[in-house]
Image (tube, rainbow, N blue to C red):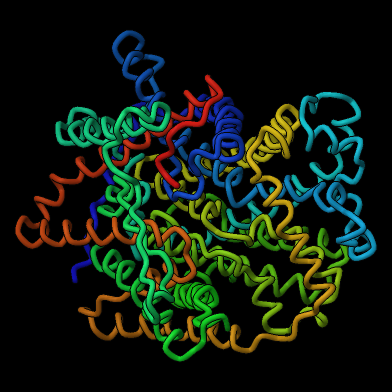
Length: 640
């Protein structure tokens, strides 16, 4: 099958990229962080950060484009260029990913949970309090009472001082960890972007909507209008049930007889924005994503036939982790010459002068960042070997996710409950790891629980946008670091101040309590019922790795081979794929027919229509969440 995708328009900005773009981004980041917190933890009406293309960010840029059109007409000297709009997009994107559903929202909810919810029944005080460093948590119940019960404010001396130490320590940890990701991104940017010329499907929409002529396309507006009308009516139905809805987002059914009942619920999800993003995905990767969903379901049926239900078979999450490790190894092998040059601190003959950092600088920064993380964890009581293994696996996984996004552009990538710590427990058991290592793994739950809002792919896509729009890479590097700095602080403020007003156990949804309880309940189980090594889980991790390598070898030997390891890794253990597989199947058929009978020209002409599907749903979905905030009511969400 042809590896088909649409190229990203490459154009220089209409005016120089100035520092005002960074200033605008810094102003918008706290607003966007508060918005995300309210959507995901208070309204719980949508989850923008679990989608690869974050709809609050797209809406912010759309509003800026609207104002910019007015400026172009009446005050052209102050109008923003395409490059400046893209800098703002990237800053909001990397900050939102850090702030979101599978990052800081979990971190803040864990900092006081082990102390507020400790009871004689769960015996947390005697079980693991002594293993928790005091400088990483909030243990004072007089400080925590306002957070959990509400009707209070963060902005008192007692509350601010109570949170200050853990917030500063976790700020330092998180910023350095994200900085290490930036360093890795700088290393892989050139071979993936310039040598292999990966597709980067996710950035098609921001690249095109900030270019000239996008909003004059009739097909785009037809798609925008159709989807907007559907979601307006569905949103009105959500608020006023007497108004009929147009369609359901997902139709559910399941088989009641074995062995097919082992598949669980099958959801026929119809999401216009998934259709739009799916159209950007190369055809073979799109087919592979749909195909491997059914391979997963077939494994469940086989397990039922063999009587393996309830045993953990087919360990699909561990297969997924292994597949990501395979993608990492493939990426390292393909970039080996460039990596050798980096390690030798020299630049190859094809290097360009516009590098974010020199080879010497990036190696020094990477080593310094890893050294800080190691010191942080050693001070918290972890063993050196556990630190190195954990972060080695985590950054390898992060690199693989970024590679997958750059090549496949999946709408979601959310491998659940199978981070490096779970693989280490499967390999060694809990006794060999010890209570201190296990306690720190509980803190790390905020970035290993699931990987749907992983920040590193957004960083990589930022550098790709810089190269296609004439932005200096060093300028984009500074913009990304500024966004991370401001974004982390902004989200700490939003995630702590909102519960003090509403109460984490009262007016707010129960999500902060769920997030806070998961790692400590898991630690309680690990300490009271130690686990032996799970060699089956470890074996299936190896199977996933080897199968990913096999798929890539087949693609290298046979150009017609349609199955891709990136799609296999993305599907395995994914919660989101249960909702989007049907939409991916629909768009695969549409794209296949369009290319067969209309060719690349028809594909190019249809592109604005599918981008309009994304933009229309993201716009109306954003507006519904804003109305919910203004009127303090639950509103329609574009995503379950």
